[in-house]
Amino acid sequence: MADDEWERVLDQLDRQVTSGRLSPDVATLAELMAGYRVPGVSIAVGDVTGRVWAAGYGSTGAEAPVTADTAFPACSISKHVTAFGALRLADSGVLELDADVAEYLASWQLRGVTVRQLLAHTAGLSDTWYRGYAQDCDAPSLLQVLEGSGPASTPPVRPALLPGSRFRYSGSHYSVLQQVMVDATGSSFDELMRTLVLEPVAMAGSSFDQRFPHRHPVARGHHGGGATIAGGWRTQPELAAAGLWSTPTDLLLLELEIARAVAGDSKLLSHDLATQMVTQQVPGGFGLGTEVDDSAGRRRFGHTGQNVGYTCFSFAWPDRGTAVAAMTNSEDGWEVLASIRAAADRLYATAVPAAPLSDVTGRYVLRDDYPIDIAVVGERLTFSAAGQPPVVLVAHPEGHHVHPGLDLEIRFLPTGVELRQEGRSQTAARSGG
Image (cartoon, rainbow, N blue to C red; front, side, top):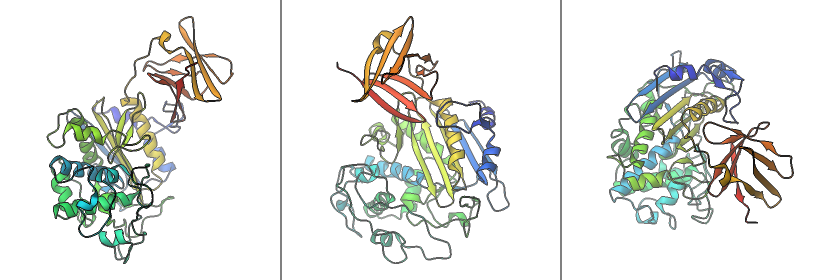
């Protein structure tokens, strides 16, 4: 990772990111920020050797420039950080992932779901997104959030689906997990996370303490269109779900520690639990507190986040030992972040070796009524879908093939063929006929 590599990357971002391939329509980061009215962006890139590049762009919204040390709300990346702390408690025997949470809860009651299900968003609890509380308003305690009482603006946390039956992302799972961790240890959550995660990982610019932004330089949040959040930011009593303040540099330090743990080289988390953390717990779902992309050639893990006034992401590409994190102080930051993440994918996604042509020919079935035929003409593959005339595929240096006239990538897997269109993947199984 050259020191100026990402400076060049940020001068050539793709406006059209759905295909995953760089298009001729490029823009600088400053142009994208202006177009989407994003006041400030902070980015950090690092690898397992310890090298880190970090920079800030634009304004905090308080007549100060964003720097690499400016803190932002980590939004739902808080869940990812919390999950690392919960797994450290499991490593030490304080928590058992498959135990009923009723074994740990003392100040609030819930039965029939496990710690693992809370981590993986499969416990079936009520669907909740936490919008935070204005600074001039009373914020509820965690118990009031769980009960839906007092000044809480969200409904009570209740079972809504069969536990373990499906994935449903909801902040309520992590509010319960926060109470589990507090009751199991007898420690306040912000202090617990400081000792379990923030200090051991050297996340010196991070805190779950909601007084943090009053004592440190932070970015002020903005609604879509550029209006500043009243008071600059909102208080998030749902700490585990959305309450962390952090920097991109701190977040990528955690991603790299998880990557080391997966490789069996971490003193903080065991290889077994780290592997479970980055393994999908149900098809199409999350790992344990982790967004996981296992599609061919694009393996990465991490988390995205959005609070009122802010957006962010933090991801690691473990096969390259590299992580990238970016944070904005705008609800309209998603398009800017999508361009940054697409650039990171192009740099760090794992290449997949091409399969021998003789091994991939034949018929594949996407649906009962949608066959795909792969044949060899000369030394090149042809592709024909649902009765369309065959076309000659273009081989890509990274091992996949590209349709010459469509936004379509084809990757051959042991079980079939993966079709990637506009950033989404489908798998067609090899026909048995």
